[in-house]
Amino acid sequence: MTTTPIRPTDPWAELDNVPTGFKAGVSARIARQLFRAAVRRLPVTVREGSAGARTWGTGGPEMRIQRPTEFYTRLGRDGLIGFGEAYLTGAWDAEDLGGFLTVLAADLPTLIPAPLQKLRGAFVRRPPRAHKNTQDNTRENISHHYDLSNDLFRLFLDRTLSYSSALYDTSLIDRGDHLEAAPPEGHDSESLTEAQVRKIERLLDRTGVVEGTRVLEIGTGWGELAVRAARRGASVHSVTLSSEQLELASQRVAEEGLSDRVSIELSDYRDVRGSYDAVVSVEMIEAVGHEFWSTYFRTIDRLLAPGGKAGIQAITMPHDRMLATRNTWTWINKYIFPGGFLPSVTAIDEITRRDTTLRISERLSFGQHYAETLERWDEAFLAAHEEVRDLGFDRTFERMWHFYLEYSRAGFASGYIDVQQITFERADS
Image 1 (cartoon, rainbow, N blue to C red):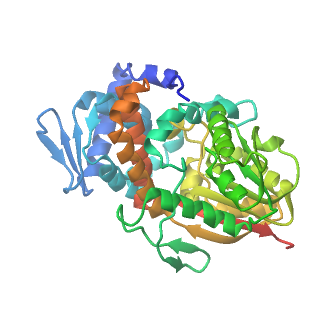
Image 2: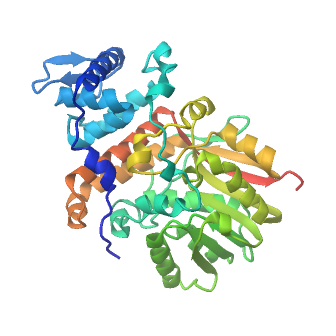
């Protein structure tokens, strides 16, 4: 189904307004000093001005600041949000955007001097109240991203339409408290589809999904997991808040002849009733909001039958960074995922121990696999330039989406964020 493209119109309007005045000038000068001091010691090359007359960095992926006044003014007013917005407007560019952002992400906690970080709370903007994932707000937050256009997502996802990290065929390293997948070997190792199927099948294996299993899926996506669980003989109830995903996922289930085993409902996870032998949820906790993590896990605990297992795939961040940023409004929140926030493994463990009978029984970490997945998505997106335009998306949207994919890839490639498959069993099992 082709839909009318949705753009975040309010944030978009702000791109036309470069701050002016005394306050903007002062903050721009401060931003200029801080930015230059930061990049001077990093393995990057930053060229400033139309001819690149001024250069900073120790050599590496190149950034070109084409409109310095706009760049530093946006950076001074809005920090990392302004940094991303300056890319959207073309105030700066980078041929190897992912490589440049990876260097920054690897050093992100120390880019700003420690004394100034203590003032962070007075500078960063807090998330708008409308982004809090209450039951009144969540549907609109989800729609902002997932109801853009099914045809758009088809352009860069593989044929499974999996919009989450793939798991490539690599060895597993025992880290004591968890397993870690060795980095993938690159594009020639195997297809994205094969790696996506491995991810799904592993989660179904770990949660014991076989013939007769009653499965609840929180967050339908475009239906691949539900289809694969049903092929095993399971009965699947899947819930989503995306009307576009509901339509296409239902169509795919019907085409597979599995409508008698799979029911998909437009429903908030908090409203689900019943008892299930397995509860699975792939990269949905990121959209819950930290205020509702306890509700999310208590809901899983309530719905999981005695002896059942739950399995989630979650993007995670270090606990100290999570605590430092949980009340921060980010570029990703403003333009991509309103109300989204990444948990830490520590937070997940503490909440489930405190509020539920669920206990982590196994963890697999594979963040480098997400970096590979995102790189493939971005390559496919850029290659589909003409088709993206034919769907009605403009140049600014293309730059936004490219920045989003490469910004995310940098987080995983640098190790700043991770992705995990986490299996839970009951403490009394």
